[in-house]
Length: 360
Ligand SMILES: Nc1nc2c(ncn2[C@@H]2O[C@H](COP(=O)(O)OP(=O)(O)OP(=O)(O)O)[C@@H](O)[C@H]2O)c(=O)[nH]1
Ligand SMILES: [Mg+2]
View 1 (cartoon, rainbow, N blue to C red):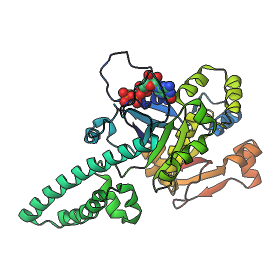
View 2 (view 1 turned 135 degrees about the vertical axis):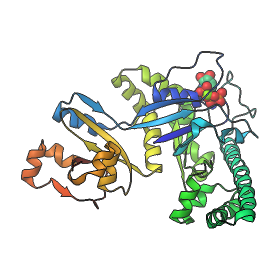
View 3 (view 1 turned 30 degrees about the horizontal axis):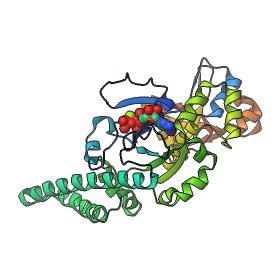
View 4 (view 1 turned 90 degrees about the vertical axis):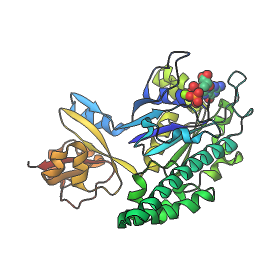
């Protein structure tokens, strides 16, 4: 999974990117440019499997994050065709809610609902430009050759335009499109079509009553629309916690009434929004979590590990994580009857521990 981090200037995007991926801050005064980094998906199940197997390697699932320069009001089209954003599955939109005398706000004052709305409109306007340009080209080509493929594509674009013109993101249209239309849509890098996690970067006071702040600022209502999720964090507090020992960090979090690290929440929110889940593989070489979409069948899940395993798929030996840990070993699961043999139509579930049988 790949997620682009976007937002107005100085909202805390790069700070969040560095915290998520462990990347170093760029040298002061260096030219702003896109950066790509990898975050590990926190998963205590991988640790529990490692206790059983003592593997040489323990590998969590990962999410790739892309940090891009801030979008200035009126300049949303800068995000179109940005090579680093090609192929992202979702956006994290960092909305500033923190006050600071030293960090200037591009709009003069902090107003997170206004900022969230400004950026959304930038995405919509950028898409409107893309869609109009593409449709004009299609019209010209239809006049010349009248190919059925172009006509079908124009039909989709004719559905997109009025939505964008009404100031609505394409995200809201997606649920009503057919599978074929969605596929066509996906081949263009349209911005307002992507799901968004609104990461609200707040100060310590706001974070103490995050739910109250989000409701009061109107962000909770904004984020109740389809394809949006909301996630409060405080970048400086996360940075401070990253420096503490795990015990001290836990005590700090309890003091702030936070049940898990803010960064874990950001990663989990992206997972949930995209309908992703993890299945696991366990052995003496490696215990590992793998990411798939909900509804993925066993052979395609195998394909995430290696295309040969998908191609030569015979069956999957499946046990739930809970059953494996309770029994202590695959052999014990086999005896108890909790190890299942599943075929090519099996839909993989979150927390399945799988051994694929294949032949190539
Ligand atoms: N007080 C306070 N300062 C913050 C917070 N988050 C980020 N900052 C500071 O704000 C400044 C800008 O942060 P960045 O993470 O570089 O912001 P950005 O969104 O990447 O900025 P651009 O890439 O220029 O658009 C830095 O000096 C940060 O230390 C926060 O939650 N509270
Ligand atoms: Mg930045």
